[in-house]
Image 1 (cartoon, rainbow, N blue to C red):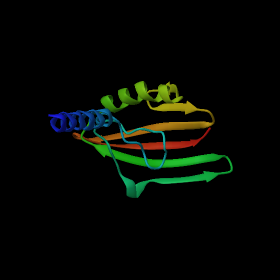
Image 2 (cartoon, one colour; image 1 turned 45 degrees about the vertical axis):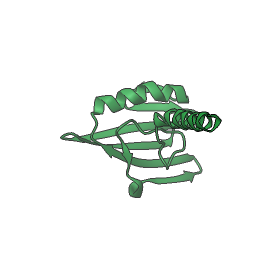
Image 3 (cartoon, rainbow, N blue to C red; image 1 turned 90 degrees about the horizontal axis):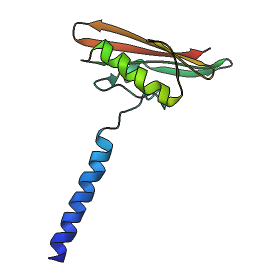
Amino acid sequence: MLRVRSLFLALVLAAATLAGTAGAEPFLSQYEDLPLAPGLTETLETGVSFDTPGGRIVDAYAHGAVATAEVLKFYATTLPQLGWTHVSDRQYRREAEVLRLEPVAKGRHLTIRFAITPE
């Protein structure tokens, strides 16, 4: 009986651990604290990131079968929680950086460019 209870407890703990990470959004590889909206996948081979004397420059892309409005709503909700100030539905500022979201929809497929530059 003790063995069955231990097995049950281990299964419950494993399920709770998986449930806790299931909703976590992935982040852009080029910028460590910029999450990807649900439905987007980063296009790794097109990303660029480097530091300049004026600040960091990041150019990253993601794509997916998701509506532009859904993606912009996700960032309007999420980015202020990460310290970004809303400038417009496609532009945010944080410290000395500007983030521009540049979505391009073709049918049901969306490609979005994340451009981060010094202010």
